[in-house]
Image 1 (cartoon, rainbow, N blue to C red):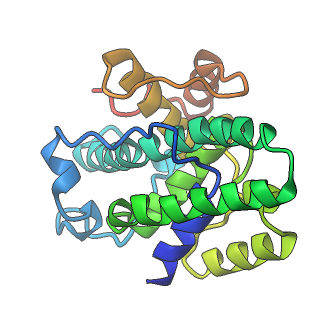
Image 2: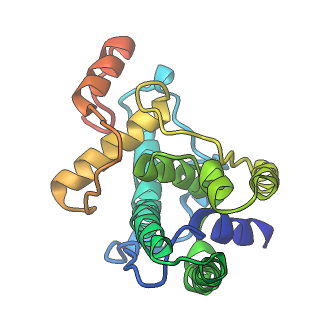
Length: 228
């Protein structure tokens, strides 16, 4: 599957074998269920919440819950990428010759190709879109820029063009003050950190959730999503 290979190389080539990755939490049964986009009660190939039409009814809460499950699924991968990027840079800094650096990087790349492939098989197209956003949140760089830094610019261009065939733009940023879905994702993360459902990893840039929430509540005249 082309998109699988793309996700393995594009999103995890920055990791290192010595780092510990956080696996998605398997305690919740829904993580082992078929992708929620197939549920007949939803009736949508991919769920995208339009906050301008957001209503506190059963269907809207269901859509929010679907997004929440997706965030729960892919956040650990984004967190792992950020942690492993730091480890990779530290390891590369200790190597003096370009030959050693290339050999080290190849080991990392081969390791991750085998390590993450079984898990990434479970990701849908929408999961991939959210993962790219969370990669930006946790690293401060787009997936495209990360590839460009560690591979050639041509490789980054090719990967981004290929990803667009699957409706995944590697240049996508995480902008909760601008994009409705990003605000929803941040809401999910804040609540998950508070409840202990997800382990917090600070973003490399400031995120003022209260300011963001106030902005959207005032703009849309609605309370925070997912609340009764």
